[in-house]
Length: 452
Image (cartoon, rainbow, N blue to C red; front, top):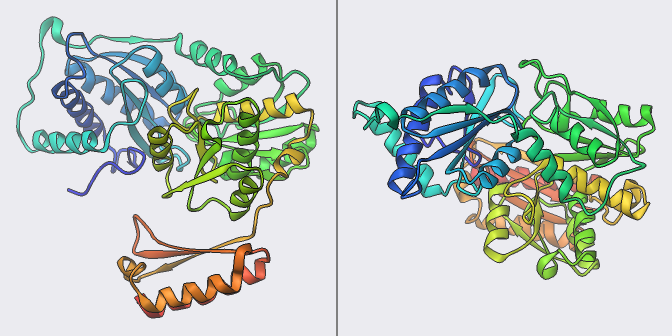
């Protein structure tokens, strides 16, 4: 069996790859593994279960709840809430486990299961591996040790989760948003109620789009992967800025008053300066990934802020932040982690903090985001090559050295193997887009000849 857990839980086409049987089995296995690890010792275990609005989330939620309760875990159903809300509630309710059903920015037919440990943190890799092993053992015939009578889990709805999470979001803001007009694109997803409520309670005038989930329209032509509607709405309504979330609202992209995109790197730059000014940017450091735009790195250097870069993936950003005690990190895609207030990327919190900076300074988002200049970036995927040799090919190394010499300090080259496909990604940044395209094209040709 191939590994079920990816970098962000278990995902697949709902009712094809991700079935009710799989959801139930993984939930039972998770309960048994955490019990073996001593997580439940001395008390009756509790789990928080939430989901995004996908139609498939309804039956998958039922399967997860049934699995946990059958293993003796009491379940608090919080309903449709963002992934960071489930993580937050898992922590503040002192639950032993959190489960979120979502495929994030993926299309509606997909769904996923993500487990959170006590405190709302991602499960350790070794626990995920153990859950897979235990699940497979019992899927092929080994019987479960099942509680009976009063030992089975009880299931209840926790309606207070919505207000508790919104109150947390508003409560951590450094200032109110009075006087701001904000357009919110909720991607017909999990934040359709949460985000407008939080922005309104913080004082903003709110216009919403993509806030009518019907179970089928999540991420459909809207949200952080489709900014066209938000751009138009911000201009139409004369708003100060726009905020776009994905299906489970763990990411945030923005649009300024002119309708121009403000990406995750720019958001990080704005928040880094705000947090340093407030004395909250520990070690004057922000964490990004190797895909962070060179313009972001140059801007941070100019401002005296250190940039630590990790492998691609918000899990690696979070690992670095926790290990070194950093307060802020994220990705160009809009996963932004403010570790003092969240254990995972939180799109609503990020949007609120960005808007708070606009309100506090009286400066436009255009001006604030201008702290960094995004350098043109070209990405070429080269398929059907031996990606394992990308770091050992002498021919490729020579071509990269030549390209870096041509670009100088105003450009950058990154070659990396895909984690899921037989291809190598060639990324080139340069001050001039045509130069970036030319260099990327030449390197892609060398990848084909050297690794093909």
